[in-house]
Length: 167
Image (cartoon, rainbow, N blue to C red; front, side, top):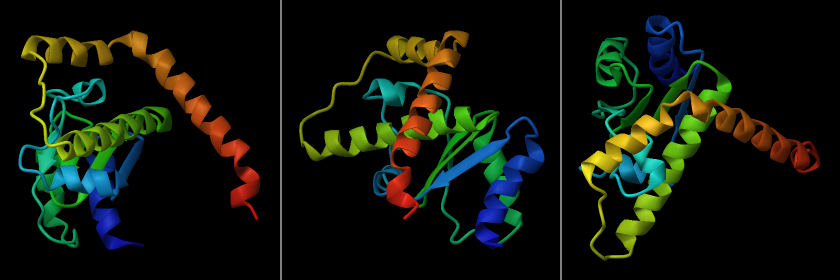
């Protein structure tokens, strides 16, 4: 068992029984945003999904101490998405489909932010009322069919590539 993974994942599974899937990544763009002091900026529709709905956990070194679990949970709060500073991204969902949707949008938001900041121009930030409305739209039950369809599309892509990864 990877102790660091156990400490991070089990803290959520133990305290949030409704969250059945936790995904934690170390992608280049996710780590790059996690290292930026301002965190995730509200500069894209993908990022606005998380407006006011994201926790941040300061880096404490490799997660090898059970003591960190309480701080992870406190920093996550009522959210299901968290940026682990100088470390990576973490999402949780009631289902695999929901967790996949969260990590897909969060990763895409990070990719967009890194590209936008690399352009060197001043960024256009939407009005806070637009940010709040967009975040609420993403919490609407109308999003569920989109999540299910996206999950099935991802499974189809994986199946189409089966021969490549099964050889």
